[in-house]
Amino acid sequence: YSLSYLKTANPAPIVNSAFNPWNGAGPANGFAEFIHPIVDLFGASISGTVPAIDTVVGAEVAYQRDMPYNVGTNFFIPGFNGITTKNVVVSSLRLDKQFKLMDILGTSQASFASIQIFDTWIRDFKHSDDLVWEAGFAPAREHTTMLTGFATLNYMSSRLNPGLSFAYDLNSGDGLLSPIVDFNYGTHWRFRAEADLFYANNSALPSNKQYLLGSFAHSDQLIFRTMYQF
Image (tube, rainbow, N blue to C red; front, side, top):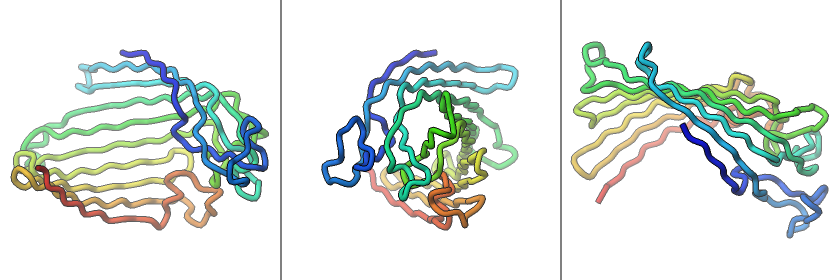
């Protein structure tokens, strides 16, 4: 288990607009700028093995005090009507497990799989606060819950490693499926082929109604990467 505290710049950019500037300090360009206000994070985590299912289970929770959110869902640009703060609780649960699939799939060693669920909870959430999830996009939700996972197989003494990962937004129904193949050739060469396939539950929605995964609708990509390690 662990306990932690972090005082840092908010990792997500917040728009400071001239229409309702943050702490009375308007943007230098007279219109809008991205800022990263300082925030306080308090965290705790715990993990251990559950022998009954031969699985490593881990849980984390973080209390984020005075997290900044843009406001103005119906402003001419969503989020450009100012900034407010909310206390936020982010929690996660993770299960890691090894599977012996050598006799079934012919792998060269045990395979690894992991599944995680994440939830972001905005405390004292009120629709009248008019919070925006991210400037230019959809209204914020009291709970945003995401399911993710991945699995990796190993062949040829772990030189050929196909894998599959996914993400699924339990609120909107949007998702991502990503098959990957890694191949290690000799001591120096590393090759990867990856496809990122996005699914938007309602791809016809405008951007100010879309969330993270849905905003990538019609943006599938295929990636090939070659690396030489010295």
